[in-house]
Length: 311
Ligand code: CP
Image (tube, rainbow, N blue to C red):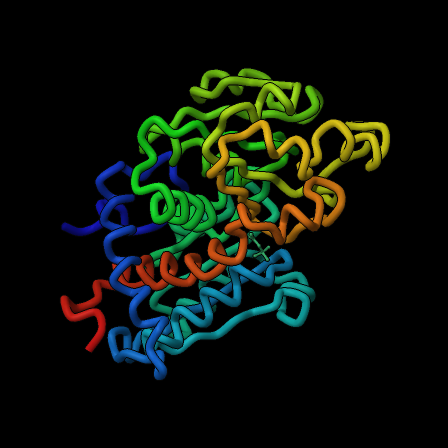
């Protein structure tokens, strides 16, 4: 089986069977990560470009490392030191990269829809590494993969996503993916950070954190995206933290074997207390490692890798 789409633009468009294929492939790639020499020739000769119009640590670095493990050539463009600062358009930037022999483009952009626009003008696969407040499909996939790895199956699990849902592209990708795999999804946050009509996506909405996390299997805490907020969505960080922060006490309301997740970067002490972020129920570091396996899987599947993944 192969992916139906040539691009990974959002989890809204991906079918359940495609998600399962991405997971099966990621599982076989995880074995390579435990080898002393983490290098296979699978994508030798392929050129992968990371074009990031917003800051990133996890996503950009894991795409770079994933490409290197698979022996692809990789270039990362920090927009602040590119010709974008001289006024070059997104369209001309992308056409230039294609003329330089790019075989696959990874793009993060502050505008929702930018990766869709790019996919129409560049004749190679495009991966959305986060577009505005729209989607972050590779984060969504690594979140789902981590839950599956820990719980065996997502069907019937109660998962709550807490925080700034309005500005969160991670929340949107997680909701699409969790619903496709049969989880029961709750969202919780201040009313000012809950998008109108979000129930239509198949989620239950809560504004009381204690009720939202009661007996859940998984808690996904979101970063408060202060850089995207125009202000006035909550009175103070202290008040936000007292109503919507995860701490040792309210964590007890969830199931005993609950998973605590966060896409990062974390505002420690705001949406999550450090002792919970670093505690026994936290799988935040495993999410990061799984991000590598998921991104290797996507590069392999989109670039038509050969059958032998780990020669
Ligand atoms: N989760 C995530 O997208 O992190 P970065 O912004 O560091 O890539």
